[in-house]
Length: 270
Length: 277
Image (cartoon, chains in turn yellow, cyan):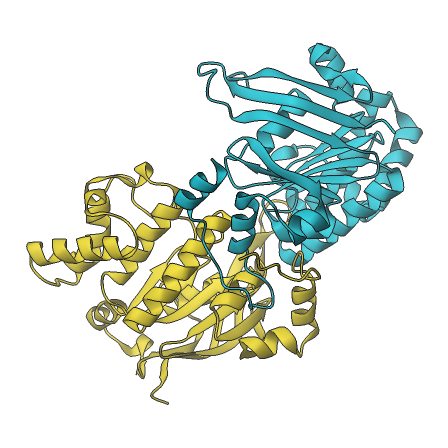
């Protein structure tokens, strides 16, 4: 079991939603319904599903950003719910997140150097000079420059902002990175750059990814294993080749058949 | 056979910076019963091209030159009032975000009826019957006519938008990223619906998208836009099967394929600028 970095058993999460004409009624929505997953060390587990399938709730619950109704999450064999506040904060250093919207997830009043360095400061890693060097190094690694530390997020394009978000997550040298739709707000040419960068960094730093996406074309390129979610439940789970070539569930088949352009073979031009 | 829509040398620039060409010398032709896709990345000028054709450019932008000939008439000479008669009646429009295009305090049936009352002067039982027929055509149960937009799903809202767009049986439909905000299974349904309506009503469809998968599914002809210009145009099989322009080839190399066989290759802009020059 030592090659499993993160595992979750029987996660359940229910939201109350106001309903009816004036919001007097309540409806219970099962965002997670008995979900179990595991992420292998150094590998990528993709969670795919349509809107409302529970995939983002799963990400937030795994990192204990939202309380669970039931179920357990183990990171490197430790039950996260049993950790004290300080222990959980310490563990979070190794579980970082990259968000979907590179516009909303960076504080517009902070310089890029401060945004990327904030995690080091919180976890009290190194002195000021060491922190500065680490931030400079990771910015360069993700394709930005040292001068960018003095700039503000609005001075960057969407793709560059996503690089800043990746730098912020990776400066702490985490073991697991949860990527929640990291490329869905980007143009296809920028998307390709970011996907390749994530893959390179995974190999260099031995990262494990939990990759959340609605885009089955993207997932085909990044995932080792896939979990298909629908209405809060895992409907299918398997290796990437098996899911795409031999899906077992009707829902998965329907999802794959809906991929635009799937009946036209890819053209390799170079 | 004369074209339904002929755009020649369309050029758009900000009023304050007339030399900054956001749409640069764009020419394209659309036939009845055919779909032309304009594909490009953000900022390539694809939406501005569509807005310019409909005479809906924001006041800060100006059409510098070019002709838009629709059913034999140059729309450039049309007054605002004349354009209002064209828009919604002879040219239907669908936009990306159905929630912002629908009025939240009016029922969807009322909003579909508004188009019919304004352009065709329908009222009473005739109007109600037409609303019912349109809802059926786009696959929405009749009892939904009394629903407000927020009570419908994203796909249903886009179906309502389509019902409004085709209400007056327009000769042409302009769809600007109509499925971008939708889930993939819903997207497939909406694309199939648009394609079927296009054939049944013999409409010409100008379809704007950033997604080559969608292009492959729906286009007859495709125009690839880059930095305000159409860099390549032709039959969909030709453009996707043997792309000629370096940008088209580079862009297709960025698109992940379903088989996962093709390596992703980001665009090398330095190389591209050299190759395009």
